[in-house]
Length: 563
Image (tube, rainbow, N blue to C red; front, side, top):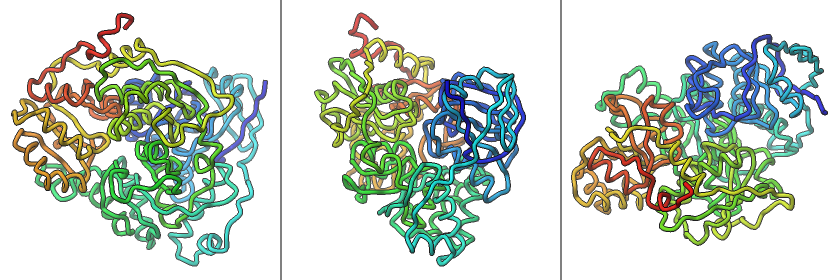
């Protein structure tokens, strides 16, 4: 048995232990104002991690978790320490920035699996500068790694302040994370995508405005994720200035630093989408997974804040899936493809695949015959990112690098019974719904057209909202699709996405909603406090017309007697 421990970030703590064997996304999974776990699908749901030593394998899901952890550190609701057994970047970066920029140290440790399992059974623990003590176990803690990082002359000049203090700060963060990831050098990246522009917490604004005030500027083309308000219309929509003002200031801070106000969580729908093999620095989990998996571009799942550091320097750590050997599938998932599937199949499979491969890249087999469209793959990748920490997946016969399979890859299967069970888990809400939520990630022009076709000129009976990027909305307006949706009573909103919508734009009287998004079906209950139903676009259109979401399985699942 190997018992070992190493500091990722040094510090001291003494507190009770909160342990889990299941990774958690801090964004969408933790309320930063209280430290309470709000992911209703997680074993720790309802418990608070504030002031406790959190022991879990790693994190999953959104890159925004770094901002959530930073906010928790700044408001006194953070864990006393974070103890992982796997490499972890997202909340580690939040802890690094909390200590380095705001003087709020928070120890982060990585333990061997055996030591981690033993610690998880303890009631309390004490972490000193040299030792971990817990219920009869005493373990020496090795200091943080100080791996050799080879910097170019230009890297060194940026680090030494030749391009200003903001760039030097970005390089310090970048180099610290590179060492944590085991990188020995940095690489050039051609474009960035910022996720930290979502007002997930006041800490996001504090960081962005501090960097902007220091003179930060991006040096590569950099798009921006969806933000938390409709930038031009939030006041007339009744959004309180206490929220709308900071959310707009956050977006404006990134624009001030040279980022493009694209405000979309689907940057792969833009004309600037990267090519196969192109090294980029994207953040936002669905965008990263789609870029790596479907486009064949190369990007780590950069945490919030690190995305800006790469955009400011044009550099990223050469580690993770930037390297060929780390893009291999290490688990093969054979999928029983039902007959007659509709578009709801793809987010369901993505969600199940993430649960079946929570910590590794999978190869999905058995799907090529269904000829998935880009929209199908978008939905699959987004849902996969809610339940897996992996930055990509492969689909045999579909995605460009599906040949990359590790020699020792293991095998698992997703059966139709698994699909039926997953469907029921994501459909915990009642039959009556008061809201239809489309566009998480942002809807494509084809999805907007499909919804308009499904409504066929009929008026919706309940609130129906589509979120889409500005570029898609311009195309929808030019093609007449926007007018068709508006005439049917559908509200199409730019800039914000379902995972960042708040009241009153989110209709306050809603008790249950229906969505075609596996991502929002997973996060929605925790984020909105409402019950959620899930189904394909046609089923959502029918529910929009009737206010009723059938509780029966879809035909392609109901036909299977084993479900």
